[in-house]
Amino acid sequence: MARDEIVWGILGTAKINDKVVVPMHSAPKCRVKGIASRSGEKAREAAARYGLTVAYDSYEGLLADPEIDAVYIPLPNHIHVEWTIKAVEAGKHVLCEKPIGLDAQQVERLIAARDRNGRYIQEAFMVRTHPQWLKVRTLIDEGVIGELRAVTGGFTYNNTNAHDIRNQSELGGGGLLDIGCYPITTSRFITRSEPRRVVALMEQDPIFKVDRLGSVLMDFDGMQASFFYSTQTHGYQRMQFHGTKGRVEVEIPFNAPNDRPTRLLVSENTSAGVGSERWVELPTCDQYGIAAATFAEAILSGSPQAIPLEDARANMRVIDAVFRSARSGAWATIMES
Ligand SMILES: NC(=O)c1ccc[n+]([C@@H]2O[C@H](COP(=O)([O-])OP(=O)(O)OC[C@H]3O[C@@H](n4cnc5c(N)ncnc54)[C@H](OP(=O)(O)O)[C@@H]3O)[C@@H](O)[C@H]2O)c1
Image (spheres, helix red, strand yellow):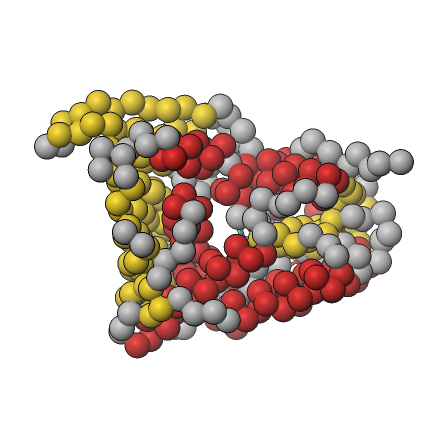
């Protein structure tokens, strides 16, 4: 009999679960059975909080449960690859948080593990299936802003908590891997193309030894994209797409709210800064629920997934080049891993 739902398990009692688990549980064709922690007590507390039936006192225990079809991995970045590979080797599909690895070479290992085990693996860039981003793509494809020439963006927050995984270099912390990856994936998604080279400036926190401020310029064919990110600046996020006839601005591009509509500002036919501006509203939705449902649907129907690992590898190649450029002070070409 054909399966009609994916049973999920969660590895680790991460903070992000507060946004993901309930929407995932109520997403079409999805049910979250349980959550695992390195501590049985934390697992039980989290299972009770999210209304899940099972608490596993080890990650291995969850992976050994034959009823679990798919695993959501919100672990610190440095162990994404290790646990993704363990999960697919246990026969599970995996939705793993971004960045799915620390560099493109690590994503190669995931591609090999996927091919060996015949399971789906996806990087949890939930923005990529949010309707507001699909709408930006449609507007630009339809030529509403003419020919796309430049992308500008920013993503910042202020977090100086020494215990946060983002401020620990040995756990894969730092701003580029945490938030700089978003303007990169959305620029690539919207343009359906890859940058040829990048140049970047990066500043390290002197105590945490992770990057806390960066500015990046990406050279796409006939188009330029630039963005800044910071983990020690006021909270801000915005993406703008500038064409020959107008502009699309995404008001809340990454942490899209689930309690009100999201909005795009579309400016058309501007002449010397004067033009018509209108807001395009997208109905209220939950991007984490949509990401889970889309992934489950791909598994159940055997159809292509929204973000294949080859896309994750391409994103990581850009990130690798940004780090190289920041170190050398020169342009860095995007290299095959
Ligand atoms: N897509 C998004 O919107 C979004 C938003 C925020 C974060 N994220 C991503 O989600 C992941 C988790 O972020 P978070 O801030 O939620 O993390 P967090 O609260 O620090 O949780 C990470 C969890 O990993 C487990 N863990 C295993 N080994 C660990 C170690 N050596 N040190 C610390 N924790 C360890 C812990 O669970 P147990 O103790 O229960 O085993 C811990 O609760 C990151 O990859 C981040 O980039 C994505």
